Length: 113
Image (cartoon, rainbow, N blue to C red; front, side, top):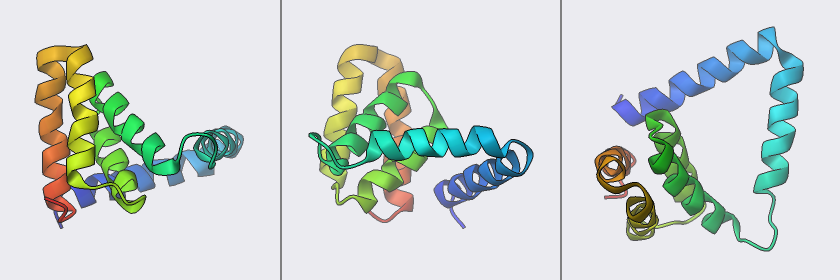
């Protein structure tokens, strides 16, 4: 199993543990996420590209892996994902360039690059 798949598995295990311990918290968060990610004026693929850029900007490696997977699932291409990262780079400079390395790894792990 590659690192990105392991990260997705780790995130799922964490969510399940929190759900068992704090079901109200996770249900509220899930409802919020479903509402924010529902089809609206911004298409879902675009929302996922925004999420990739935000994940790079906030330097969250597990978030990057999750959002790259979701963007791919919404039909984004590797080129679109990397272009979204370029926006993060304009705002975050060198650290965002460094964290885009995790995007590249995830794209490779998910066989999109």
